[in-house]
Length: 216
Image 1 (cartoon, rainbow, N blue to C red):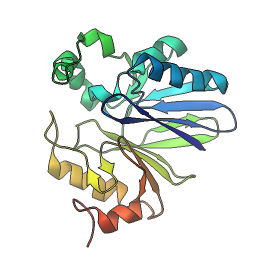
Image 2 (image 1 turned 180 degrees about the vertical axis):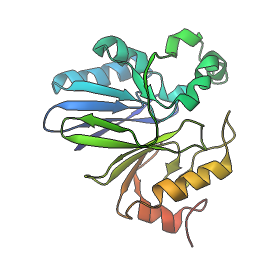
Image 3 (image 1 turned 60 degrees about the horizontal axis):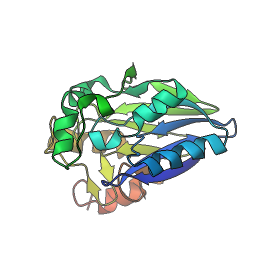
């Protein structure tokens, strides 16, 4: 499985495009905000003759949503995410005002096509992503795990040397720690973690070194 990473918008969100030899692909957290960012992602897809099979969000905080409607309109497929985050779509404009971004709710509110739950499998090409529900940063946060490549896409649950914030609506520190310990830290140490912000890391590194949830 090939993993292409983009960093988009003023909040530095990682958008991931996963593909394989079949040219089928999925886009995780389409966060492109500026016109040139949207063009960069779109041109990458078109130039590689990719067929977009799934548009997935690890959670529904506004900074991870900016580019979703652009892809939905272009490729005619709808967003996949966990239903527990649906309430976050009701006040997108209020969230944006805090960052000085003028918008209405409808500017970035996506149409949800599929609600993803624990145990679901997302298939594209010869690949499979397993879905793990991992609340704490948000009630509907999910992990996307590709066992064959030893890769997990953690959204804002786990970062290199840190964890997601829990002071936003629906956040819960105890839930987040439990999600990390019971869903992520049971994966092989060599599993590579691709977070929603910042550099990639590994499960083994975080178990030893993460000051919030690591084992000393």
